[in-house]
Amino acid sequence: MLYAVISEDVSNSLAKRLGARPDHIARLQDLKSQGRLIMAGPHPAIDSEDPGEAGFTGSLIIAEFPSLADAQHWADTDPYIAAGVYAKVTVKPYKKVLP
Image (cartoon, rainbow, N blue to C red):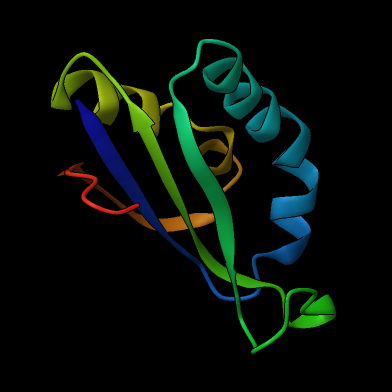
């Protein structure tokens, strides 16, 4: 089943994000290589694809996992959590309807 991992950043998270980004991206690449990643990306803090110093306010990942517990465990072990980037992470089942 698909699950949405919806994360909210702490204030001024950009430096922490940049430090943990290589490990965070490596985990996403692993999901992608397994054919389980549907989409992933950050929420810019301003209305721009490149927010610069404004940074990001969170992230959205949609991926396939065997269960909600597995999705939650995967989310709980994200390098961004260890680095203090995320203030809150919500994991929910997701049903793709379109396209």
